[in-house]
Length: 106
Image (tube, rainbow, N blue to C red):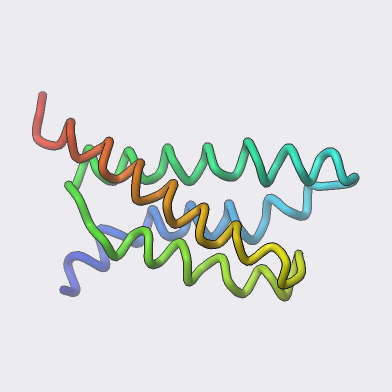
């Protein structure tokens, strides 16, 4: 279990940067929408695909994405943005599944 958490750490850090630091770049509503609807899901998807390619499938990663996003509702957004937590978890789940298709192929 400890080894699994260590392999997850770089991807969790990437998700944390994605969820916590990128919203500070939003200077307007348009920029915020671009970040939340394009940039942030793309980073989450790529992180999940890379994890899947390198380490296989792991349900902890999408659950961690969900848990990591929830505090941002109170920091950057409001409770009406809860749907993004679920959406990002689903995106990470899909990305991890896509990456798993290529796991072990060289």
